[in-house]
Image (cartoon, rainbow, N blue to C red):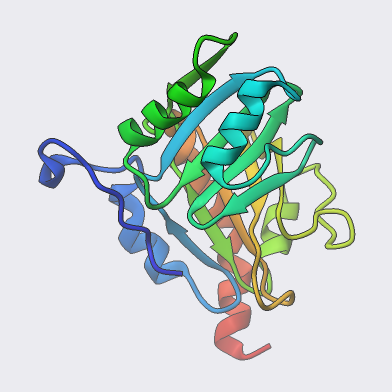
Amino acid sequence: MAEPTVSVSGPAHLRRSPLHHLHDRMRSASTPAAHLAELPFLTMVSLRVAPATAAADRIGKVLGAGLPTRCGDTASTGARTALWLGPDEWLVTSGADDPAALTAELHRALADEPGAVVDVSAHRTTLELSGRFARDVLEKGCAQDLHPRSFTAGTAVTTQLGPVPLVLWRTEHADPAAPVYRLLPRSSFADHLARWLLDAMGEYEDLARTGE
């Protein structure tokens, strides 16, 4: 999957993602069996608002889909997705919106009603793990039930992989035999998580090379 392009203000040539130093290693370790890449600088906005209110309805219209109401649910329109984190908490992600612009748009929709809209784009980074052994890699260190009948495409939950807390999101993908997962750790945990995943992918790298 191509990395999204996001408008960035300031000296963009000086920006370095939390995993910039591991990009070459992730590229060389990736195979069709298990592919790992960072999707840096995605827009992320933390949203708090009471559900089933006029403000929640206005925000849903801005996003193009109503806010998800159950644990694990997501709602996507175009490049924007709202991930359910709690009864009155969501994480809005986008691969196309400028962080400041999307934050301002959602803040206007909230208006004067109780709640909060905060740009948290620098708080996390995004890793994308895909391939026919992607679930096997995750199951080495995640207690979440990741079987497709339970963890369906479009599901996102707050969980833990190894020692790292994160948001784990199975995105929509045309091939159910090669699922795609997005992992959203805090930036300070990203290096540890990426190295954990690279180690967990090792045996599948060998399988891919032998054709098994």
